[in-house]
Image (cartoon, rainbow, N blue to C red):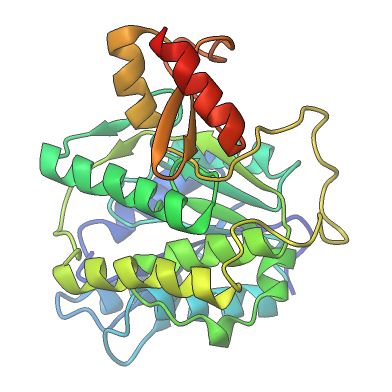
Length: 322
């Protein structure tokens, strides 16, 4: 059993032999007391035996060997169960390829003092991504907006994979009932925690494309994600907001009241508009967009999406056109 307040970073691997040593060293340079769990999917490049050597040399590193490539979701589920059984309090998800910076770990732990789940966002106060082609950036931004509109989640980066769970969140979720296995796993886990009423925070991170190895993204993973958000919407009886308040044991909410979200828009698309015609607050009522000229945006480079009843939506539309 691990001591209270301990943290573990779960890192799934498949053909990551060039990254596992450097990423564990980088994590220990930032937080010497943290533990690292690799979940290797029987990598053909020899990642598994290399990890066995690292584990033998450092008691802070652990490895789970899967018999075959079983998917990202299954790797994390196995890691979650392992971490919960050993008493860790904060459980991280992280990539092995340095697209997630180890230097952000202290920021996550600080935010976790007032949140049950902390998401690392690439889209807070601008776009924080380097070395991506425009096509992949547009796919990521479009995917985030797609998830927001259908599920109602107000988070700027619901598809991101750098996050920190408090153990009470994972204990409340039936992990064996999680069905998604590709990158949509990230959407399902965040949505499940949100619907249970846990407090979820976001912090800005800088995402850098991998330094070594190759991307595991493919068309099957994209198709799974497209369908998954509709399944989540239907699974919750067409609800687009949590029914419960903060679960017992969660940190108290912050004094400030968050904005109301019904049909959230990606901040990045609001930024594109703001850069052209100045800050505005957008409200969305299908199928009309209206622009409110009476309330300033909270930031000159970001717009907030707020719900307005139809009558106010049309009134704002008329006011903006005069």
